[in-house]
Image (cartoon, rainbow, N blue to C red; front, side, top):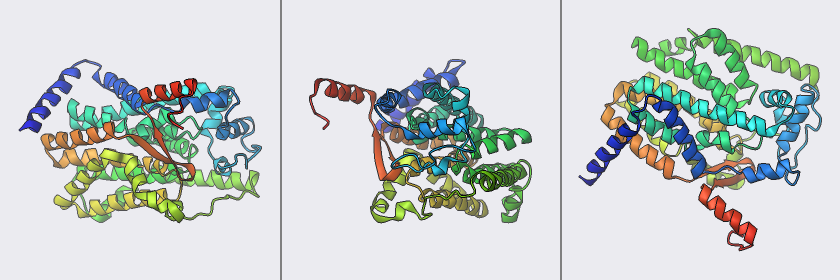
Length: 400
């Protein structure tokens, strides 16, 4: 009874706050501000780099690429981080060239892309749900997990935000030419996007299945090559053709230092695998689990197998890298698929309750993620960052 009263009051309050004509934009800005407040980015690290008292070595290599993309110097640059993996990542070097190596300007643009990413997803969720409350709870959840905070916390020069944005727009657009160029842009931002192209295909398969009412296994497979699907296949072929040509022509002696083994199953890393998987989606695992259950209860077994296979690909490839949160966040299309599936199979009231618990977990859960070489990072809330700054200033040594 107490929960029911609280639920009614909270839903009513949310509906009241979302009465503005520009409620999606206001929701986006509020969610972004809240996520930055609760998980304040490590801008002091960036400050030290800009003042030459710290070393974010990826930016140095990106500047080298910008100066000579096909003959960058210091491929082995960096004590702990392999830069040989970056020779086919061209989005940040292009931005570095355009901005004359202005890191701050690139990061500001990255932040704006992050806002646009959240805003576009809010519009999509509302188009599926036609419910402001559900959209609000989803966006609050998304903006407070790794993928929502990374546009502002990534001061290291990884550029995943751009790849996420390209993939989202490829997923939502109906123009074949746009899909082609957006997919290539994502692929040349980070190799993880190449695998994520399959999740874009999968999203179209799910939509087509419900649109036609045909859930037979072979029809689902056929849909991967129909409509916009064939554009993804062409994008893959063109990407690998360019990559092989560039490699043979300009990097004939290039060898990766990576040992091609599942990093997170090695040594002590495997003890943190469970927490790493959890921290990627946090409360949004409730959404994914609910969509899985919806497919099971409605006996969409063929679709369930296809989607599950895609998710297995996501998790099995994610364990090959140290920064598993970055890798698994490329699976954000699964979150959009889950929203779509739930609204095809469940009542609005039940979905609201699921999303309410999801939002509480995502907002209240600290932003913890695994970065390179099994380093677990916690982004502290802004008030704690202020206290930590005062601690260093006055030498209280409370955090030593």
